[in-house]
Length: 224
Length: 116
Ligand SMILES: Nc1nc2c(ncn2[C@@H]2O[C@H](COP(=O)(O)OP(=O)(O)O)[C@@H](O)[C@H]2O)c(=O)[nH]1
Ligand SMILES: [Mg+2]
Ligand SMILES: [Zn+2]
Ligand SMILES: [Zn+2]
Image (cartoon, rainbow over all chains, first blue to last red; front, side, top):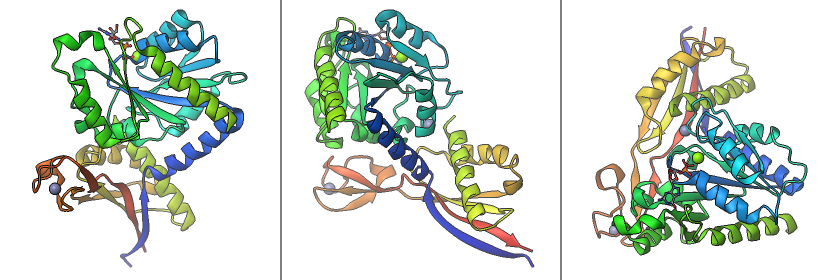
């Protein structure tokens, strides 16, 4: 008696989620739905940028939004009011990230019948959302000028998983020692292929470049 | 609360492994946690106790944690160094062209089952 048997497992806690995410991506591909995962710190301008972007795109593609940033309906309602598109709030119960299973549950709450693009506004956090594949086709993040140009050095994983980095609030550049070229360099250290798109969501300046990127991505996803 | 979420993933994976091995009680779960992973071992232990005791399979089950030291590799001079001490900048050649070799693991290493 008292013997202990050891069963080796050697499995990352992220492994199961990666499987779920790949499965979800495949299903979305079959349905012709493009899922974009949008991440940032709280207050970087995800909702504001989204509203601008949706208003540029909504006559060309059909869009829906899932809001996970905070546990209230504020952002989901704001998006619905400002753009008229389908938008729902995911209740994350205080969780600091979304995984593929939670994303799937969110998608189940949407009418995807003739939707081309779903944007997921992830929980405002630069750490663990980067570790959990949501099943999205691409990841994008927003870095706002007041946060500093060295964020890519402090949160390398986040920047390495993003295909696009939107640098928002460029209207306040004169008031911060934010060096956009340096920032670009730091981002490319983490991900040489990342696109950097400077915008001012407040006025809409530069947002068309982000919208164009999305449009190209969506049409590629649906045709290839 | 990040650690509580992680505990739920651990429980899910341990349940699955227990099922595959016809185990009805697990006495310990051994984790490999990287020094620069997003998991704080003390918080993980607290969340573990709370959540594990709700499961008959894991009642009283101990969570053992091995900390994996973080090591960064410099692409410019080819050397490895301690991540926590020097961060992203290589202490040998001052390059920032570096990447993490290990130290961000959140991994279930093994489970222990007492056979009596
Ligand atoms: N100055 C300035 N403020 C902005 C800009 N974009 C967003 N904001 C403000 O930043 C705050 C947070 O924006 P929000 O979109 O809610 O960020 P979220 O938490 O990432 O969704 C709000 O007060 C916005 O009005 C911008 O381009 N310039
Ligand atoms: Mg928001
Ligand atoms: Zn988390
Ligand atoms: Zn070096």
